Length: 247
Image (tube, rainbow, N blue to C red):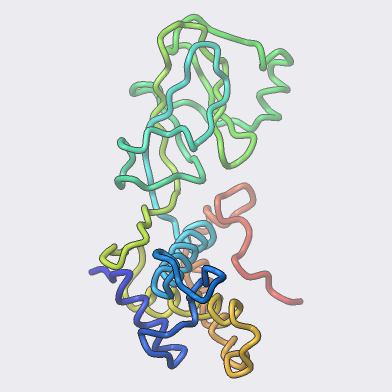
């Protein structure tokens, strides 16, 4: 199943006991009017997109694959350079890489420090063909580096697998299905409702409704604890809990 942006927007209004024509999310043009694209519904859909992104980065392992192209003498490529059209699922984005392949050959993952320890000249070590590339490593979660890298004029295509974020279009008909509908209907409107409250802190009638944030974080922690233990260990994509527990 799936829920649309329109359904999640309506649920957000229901949580706050507001009508669907509420002005809570309106961004004024400064002259008393509301310009196109600044209506409450648009604002809420933007917050829904934020929630999806945060959930996938903290407690839901949304699998993505795609392709990166390493041009001649290129050691490091940003994930933002991924060929989006070849992503699976379509138009999603990746934030954490788990595996890299050149053709059908799986490259061995290594840490940047181990590559450096093995070859002090690793930053300038090149090979003539992509078939001789042996390792990939990450200096952060937003790029992929190869060792050794290739000096061939033909670009090296690297297929990568990892965890990402589904495509989120700010349109009422956009469907979301990355977690079960019941959890989505509980968590995402809670996040959007909290952001609306924060946007309207000058309204004392809304201040007491900040408990929606707790509902959202409780949902994230439940999803986090259901992740495979390997994903939650040190160095894994979800090593840091979404909510820091108080001692």
